[in-house]
Amino acid sequence: MNKKYQELSDELKRLSHLGSILGHLGWDMQSKLPKGAFTARQNQMTALTCILHEQSTSEDLGKLIYDLYEKGSDGYNDLEWKNISLAKRSFEDSIKIPSELIKRRAEISGLGFQKWLEAKQSNNYQIFAPLLQQYIDISRECSHHLNPEKHPYDVCLDGFERGYTSKDIDAIFSQLKLGLSKIYNKIQAKGSIAKPLPKQKFEISKQVQLIEEVAVALGFDKNIGRIDTSEHPFTGGGHNTDVRMTTRYDENDLNSALLSIIHETGHAIYEQGRRTDQYQDTPVSMALGMVVHESQSLLLERRVGQSRAFAEYCFPLIQKYFPEQFTSWTPEDYYLLVNQVGPSELRIEADELTYPLHIILRYELEKDLFNHRIEVKDLNEAWNERSLLLLGFKPESEASGVLQDAHWGDGCFGYFPVYTLGAMAGSQMYETFLTSNPDAETNFAKGDFSNLKSWMNKNIHAKGQLQSAKSLISSVTGTAINVDNYLTYLDQKYKKIYNY
Image (cartoon, rainbow, N blue to C red; front, side, top):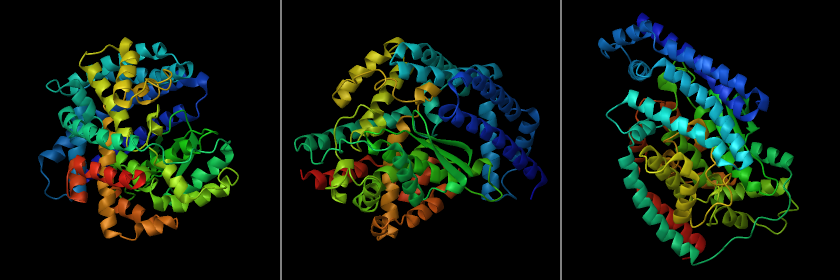
């Protein structure tokens, strides 16, 4: 191996290790950190972020990258050359942003989550609004440094998945909204088809056991991961050998934790499925981006976790832990329950059909904020108006409306669209998987998901960042993200359920 390349590889791994520490500090902040320790944690994360930026933009690193890149790809395999190319791109992006701006953004990030949590728990958006304005200002400033020729919101979108512009997403969402409304209207004409969830308590200690059993069956490896509790479910940690999922529990609603952990397990097995060879901890081994990441979580949550086969497997487990609550229920009853379509205030508890409308709501509001069409102080009112227009209701509180998601508490503008792009990509991937595994759902009903996990590991997770998201999706499924395919899947599925 080229001596200079080995030097670069070692340095990239060292920087990755520093980033891993930040990942663990962030996970801890959202799950375990005592309330009184927020300021100290903010200072810790700011200090480490500044150190990481300084070392990621050093002259020595830049010289090493350019020396390797300018000699061309001869003598390197695809993985090595991709590491050099990705290192160059990352270095060039990092040096564009001044150190003082990195520090300000890190300081706001630590305080932002704290203020978002306080505002949500107090049901008072105005507690968080000043921080949100600072986030937007800093995001605009960072975007200008990264690419002054590009719209700031498009630069934000690039931060989560390169290659999808707001123009692309506008076209996809416009077609999707129209198609979803047609299906939704047919369903509304039919009324309810499911029994309501039993109005009994679901002991949280038993829910903990249930969701762990389900996560492990789906492929989660407890030897290199764990499950905890947080205000907003997420998957974090800092390494593919230390993956941390969280969920939240509601003793009145079993599905709140169960469905969210199926979603998070998709993220977790992606992380656990990344390369563990000599390329581990280098850029090429990392997860590709959030469209692909969400494709894995939503494939598992929607196409698997809400399938009849999964109900055949999972419902007996539910009865094992909660026999008194489901005495007269069947797996089919449970299947109809988890696929019932109707209004939901909370995005993470929305059904498969209306979930994209929750995403479109947030996407349109973010664009309006970045285009100065609405002001931060008016965001709560704008949220309520858009919710009524898109979803048919106004939320009962600010906590269940504008404050429900943690994303803006971390300044993650441009993230929300990846959920629906990921759902469509994941659905296409699942159809591709079924063509080569026609008996898969028979195995799912028996609790065997090993073929699916192996297929995802091989075709998605181990690929790392060798391809762009668009290229990977097309190479795996044979087509780009296709709205017509997704709408056809939804229409066929819900036509059978609702008999419209």
